Image 1 (cartoon, one colour):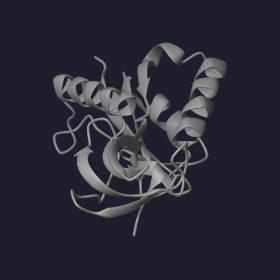
Image 2 (cartoon, helix red, strand yellow):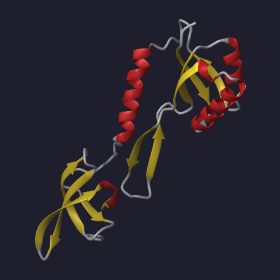
Image 3 (cartoon, helix red, strand yellow):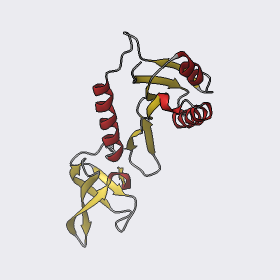
Image 4 (cartoon, one colour):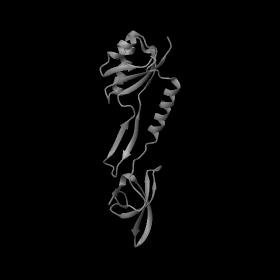
Length: 175
């Protein structure tokens, strides 16, 4: 029998814990060679909503992780015997995971982990208050939004003169 990709459904938030318990159990039973690779999807993005206090980390495919395994009844019973495992999908015609699709998914998820995407709601012309840094409590006008950098260029009045200042989304508050 050859190895293919399977999806293991687990309690949401316990993906890493269940994976570690499964690895330990497989080692104890001498079955570690049946699973070649584990993949627990990493956190996807960090959403920044107007302030540093409101940062949320979201998971891709919460409640699942992938294994590349040679599945037989013994291995299926070991996996299902781990606390937190709900089901195993894959290996039949309805739930066939092609290796190239899984590899593409894994590479996309790893790239997503490295480059978080901030969510913003600032537009050119918005009045904002700077909440932290050397310009804390200054009020200015949004001149340019730079979503790729997670920053906004704000025009603030210093000594009666408009001065552009680059500020991160997290340190701005809409007025």
